[in-house]
Length: 293
Ligand SMILES: N[C@@H](CCC(=O)N[C@@H](CS)C(=O)NCC(=O)O)C(=O)O
Image 1 (tube, rainbow, N blue to C red):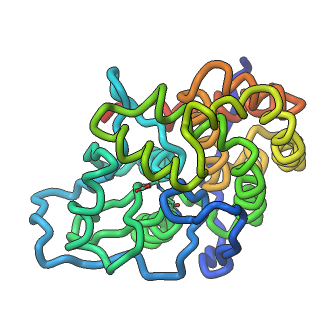
Image 2: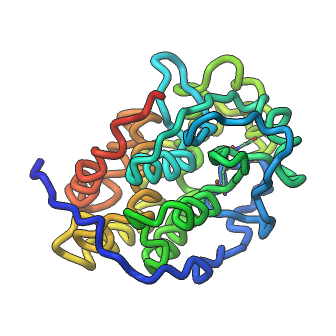
């Protein structure tokens, strides 16, 4: 794999307000308890809690979901935050938290929500922020360099394809998370909530995965391939400039890689041009290598 030259010091005017969530119900499934790739709720997901333990240094706390041993990051939404923190070179520690513990841990520190989700961060001044895009905006405002390029039009374009991909790939990744990734502490919670959401036993839902799922997903993965090729010097959406759009798509590819070898192979094959995506993953390595603490 050839090595790529990145430039992350191109500075641009950032207008984070242009990133408006395409709020829509893209599924027949209820949106609660599904891992939503885009913020669905226009709530303010941040709060400075008086109960927050005082942090004695400048470290950020990142809440992430653990996996079976060896414990490593897997979930696509916290991957976006982790990649952003690694890219900005910010000191942070990971607070691993199992699904059933999220609500009890979060509810006293964040505004009331129907569903408390990972990622969330506690910033050095004690402010809690939930929702990966909100966290990205907050990090960008506090630590502007190197920039996440939150004004990139590719962010909305990638989100659009992830939204399209969600339904066809869910028989691959929902059972995959349950059977291949989660610790026992999260399994009952995940099975119950997801079986309710999809209306099927996980074992039955898993039968809908494999080749037919990837055939249905292929047009959307290929749209991402086309987006990645728009700036042919690559390997990032914006050519040689890495940004949050790359972390969103890279997080999804890393997630597929954690689901199973078949899942990442299916995704790459569906893309029509595996090399384009493999080059992106290779170029993201400086920020994806830290995945276990
Ligand atoms: N829009 C949110 C989605 C986050 C999300 O769905 N997180 C999942 C894990 S990837 C979660 O924490 N779900 C909690 C639950 O199902 O109870 C974001 O971008 O941060």
